Image 1 (tube, rainbow, N blue to C red):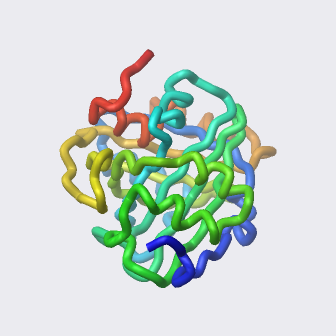
Image 2 (image 1 turned 90 degrees about the vertical axis):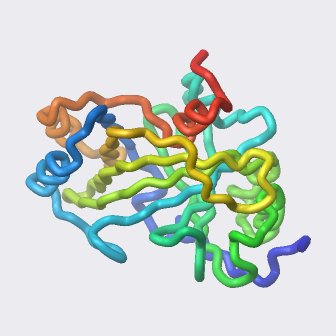
Length: 243
């Protein structure tokens, strides 16, 4: 397989103004009481249902041979980006999956999101070739990063609940698990590490939004924290260390 002609790629970034640029603040909870967090979020925000009240999210993260995206995060580099394939509520993608490039410029973040439909099932694709297979169908702004990717590094799974508050979006993530993919030819779901008891609340707000939402989260005893599911997985699997 050398081309992605059977696939149709839709650039959803152009249809989602909230993805273009936003401020993303994360709050990490150890030994979390998920039911209490859910109750608190429902008091301040409105739940959003997709396939159900809880989404199962799975993401395959890609990087270069030096794990540059992981190392940039650990070093606190202000301008960085990472790439992943994401799907929802199934062990492997069915009708579609999403290829995403998430970028950060200091406090501002954004996401380039591409829906990929048709063609061979993702689980049957050679993982190392996925970026090259996608590249011809992607817009130039995403292709530049794709050309540097050489490895599928890990699979992250977690449960996510969605909320909205005005122009802000909030998510509650928990039950994080990690499966190693380095050296694997195709997708495997052998989860060998998990973050027991850890929950994460992410607040995604417009760049001109007031600070009220962050203040509201502090009422829960939370402080903003640096947290990357990709980096955490790399550390748990022994791919990267602090410092």
